[in-house]
Image 1 (cartoon, rainbow, N blue to C red):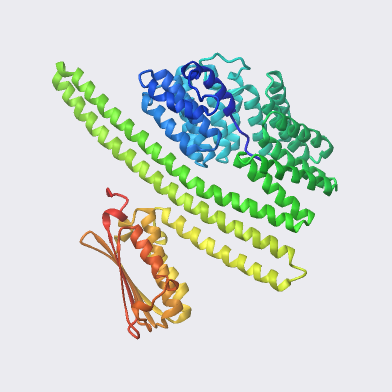
Image 2 (tube, rainbow, N blue to C red):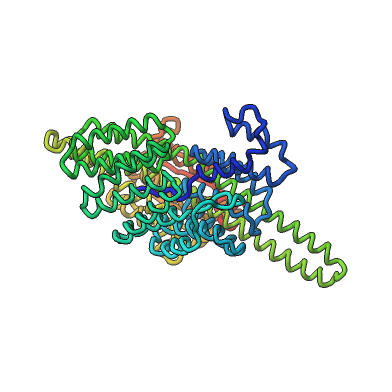
Length: 611
């Protein structure tokens, strides 16, 4: 099941183009490159807020259509700088629409949910039925995509109550039409296994899309109906819908819908024991991917997932490997691109919050100036406002910092899990293919899968532990280190002593610092277990002179400092010290054991201090 596109970007661009057309109609290169033409005109519109904002919307959404959300965010920030924040208006509403979509396509689902909630608040304040339809549709999608599907259904139903068919009055930059919301409601029921309700709403979505007519809506509804009938084992009923989805998608330049329909129809053919037809459809899908390299990555990923599953069932090993390699390349490209996109989005969010705080400060000063005739009352009010403003800014700053830390940990964990699971999947499929002919090779691959799974579980455990607050002795750092040391060093008959200040857990409130310091100690202990031939070791963590001092040493065989290599894990420890703005010192010699000493400034590793 693929993620349903909830708004037609092309529809918004069409309306925005109509609104903006009088502004740039004289530009010579408009037909050749609308974005460049709009950029050239933007400087001429500095003193016309409405035209300037409409042009920024046009440029931002043009970039968004090409999946260049970081470039689009730059122009959304330009709009935000022109608008009065936190005040209900049409432009503020549509800024939230595009911002919500940007978060959605970059996997920031909680931010997508918060932006959708803001949309509903604005629409409610404006008491506008068209905006309420769109806001309820977005909020339903947001809940559906954070795995709260049942919670999404009332919002879709409310959205249907407010929605209307085009034509929409020209002052609306976009609007969720009935077929959008019925289609999303059908998807929600499909995910809940309520197939009769899903079929009814998908048919209704197709009816409303046909009335306009709106080819994409018709194609999407057909694909959904095909999936529903296939789920109910009614393959003969499912296939005509998928064929129609393919034909309409190709005829109306909606190739992404055709792509997923190729995969769904190929699945139907294989279930009817027609493997050649299934292969032919998959081949047509790959040809389409080659011809249209900018197809939305959600649809491309779904098609490749279906292709891998089908090629495995068909026993087409060469095609399977090619599809898997293509999917891995696509995932890696998305991981790298997503980091850049998310960084830009978070910076934009921080900039907007900072601007909001500045505007609030200026507003407070203006109120103070207007209240000079009642000086005493104004002085008391100003004092209260300053206190509240400081508390609010500190709270906002901490929230933004926590959000940035959690986003970084989430991205790292997402990339780590994604890469490892892709590798495990490949080993598993290859092990299955060579099981009978090369059982030894198959066992080797299964062993690699086991090791990777164990290593992934350990890394996930460390990340989850670092993010949990210390509420009992089971979650403090000393318990974590002792448990790891006992499991690792005791079988080697190495006695380890621990000297850890009791206030260390309060100091290590920053999740990134907790994770990095734990991994430094684990890396050092691994080196002791593997290379030292020691009988005794010690771990010391203490606070002195606004610094955290960490020492790990052993009485093993040691080595000459100029002979150590990256294989000893020293470079990993040095890098983690650098990440925490700390210093690293290694003291060793042959026969003298090894001592690793690290110093970290408390303002860096404490979540409660300003860095």
